[in-house]
Amino acid sequence: MTFFEHCDLDQRFTLSKSSWTPRGQYALVFDFDQRRAIKLYMNEDTSDEDVVFKIMAKFVDSGAIRSDSVWIQVSPDGNELIDQGSEVEEDYTMIPCYWTRDQFPPALPSVRRSDLVELDRLGLQVDRVAYDIPEGHTKEATFKYLVYENNIGAFWEEVNCIIGMHARGTHPNIVSFDRLVTETVKGVEKIVGFTTDFIPGGTLDDSKTRLFKLKYLHQLIEVIDFLNLELGVVHGDVLSWNLLIDERTDNILLFDFNSAFPLGEKPEISDVDLVVVAMFDVITRSLGDVFDGESPYEIDGVQLLAADLWEKDPEVNLDADVSEFLRVLKAWVERRKAAEEDPETEEVARNPVEWPEIPDPPLVDCSGVMEPRESEMRQRLIMAGQPYMAWQRPSSHDLSLPENKGKVLLATGEFV
Image 1: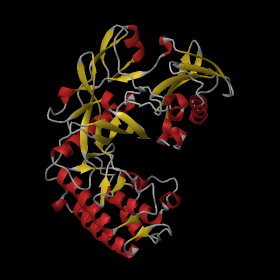
Image 2: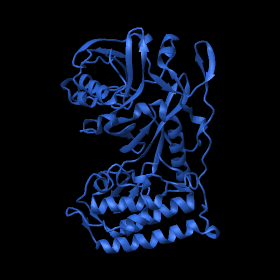
Image 3: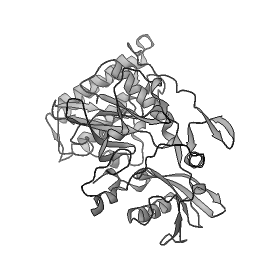
Image 4: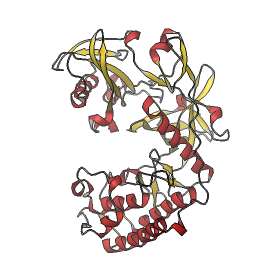
């Protein structure tokens, strides 16, 4: 079962816009499962995401929408699919203007997107893949890629953070960079994503019964100090769903740097506070109940440590008393907070990662006028007879269809 078969609908779909055309009122919906944009016409208010997403899920997962359709028309109550079409004039799919290979360090290894085989869908723009390596073996990796145009800036920040950390060497408690992923368009090699080592077993959020050791907390504290004080990187999302246990090394691992930023840029977000929140979640499994409706990124770690809330969940397994975990946490938090508040010991990274500015976007033909744009409409490329990068793939529900059994799905979205 892939991520998209059990996630919330507002995780799978996003409503890009709600507007009008001569055909009527529509919602432009992006489906991260199929990596596809569809215009939904229903002659009713199309700004209600809950209604729109339920309708989309119903007709996508039933197989009612053709693979080449770019728009559908449904009845006002959303129960009936009335019409659909593939006219290029209705195609509002946006294609990111990907960066070229020469905008990244030349020594970094790479792999072609067409050489990656999809094994699982782990989340939005994140898949588990496999590819052949020169030694004659197959390697599994996590493939993180850019397909949705609104993520262009954040993706640039993340990939360069990962590359910058990789240049400083590997760390036993950070999931390692593997390769850049490339695609050639019009003879130019583009960067569409990157791979990291795949670590099986799921996150700390996935299993509450897995034994959590005191040494994992010590490792987590050490790696956060390393990131913040050595590399000048704030992870920004140190929570249970971004932590793994590598059973081969018995180490805790931190991954997913899409919220990372340079130390000092966002003082309201603290990895120190987030470690306290993560440990509260791991030990009590009551984060959602205690802080219902409150963002974990706004919880004060010092106040949480002092609260009488640290009751271990009966299903949670620890190798030390909760009091020992709290003792270690409190000592570390006091040290880090004291350094933050003392002007004479201001936290400054010793070997900071470089954060290159995002390159100026290329000039794109917009109705006959060349303008700098980070993405361009697939419609215009098709009409001009130009090649473009295709990402669309079958839905998760279609993977198990009889006609697809025995086939291999490439990261390009094609069955072979």
